[in-house]
Length: 342
Image (cartoon, rainbow, N blue to C red; front, side):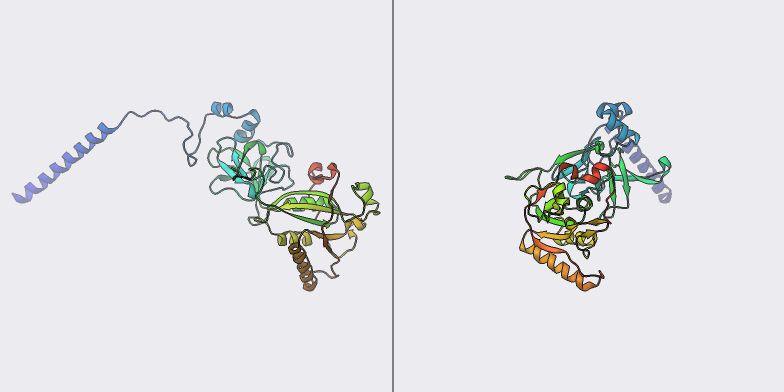
């Protein structure tokens, strides 16, 4: 009798437990309400109806973000290198932060460019439209089309996230007491002459850590020279680029590397087809540390055998910088031309 009673009691106990558990669960449940598209946390996906997207976005934003549109080059803003200061670029569709200003660079393409997104904020998918194969990038939160990513960007990633400006909203970093929220905490100045200043400016603007750059004339005898004055070679001015850079992001030694790599420092008063003293190779140093770094770099290059002829680059104290005419500023960008330097 014992062997039969024990299994029967066990089955009865299990059945009662199942019934009680079901009753407890169904009694605790509340009626479910239909899910609605709402914004909760930044980690949640934002899903809206087409009508809701149309109401949220401008017609141009809707065309780009929801229908993979592309804005015209040089028309959407945010193309200048960090001209809006320190902060983050957010998705205009869902406000998710996507890129920070310290990863932005001027690619000369006419669209805002970044070499690295914030972790987990960008998704990518292969895009075979328009007869080409590219990698489309979208906002990981709302799926909005942002642009494309290419493998021709600067170090350290080698990537160029080419983004529609209309898809972005810049938010400046909050300022600490006594500082401006739209200006880097500290910047330094460097000045280089390496031939035609159009290409030199575009080259330095593309360097991460360069905040701004402008072309002008330096090292001559005439006050307020014009381009015509300088081309006459009567003033002894050199065509130069004055660079504002953030030492916390890029060092002066790195700027010197870019300088040496993008012109021939062994040809006096000449760069390629450009002849004249205004095209001479020159470093105008702004302090003793820049002087030391430039002279040491020049010495090492001469000793390396990299160039067949001696380096003739001048290393001289900075003098008055005369800003060139406005039509020379960002000239290649205005003309839609690629960088003319190698």
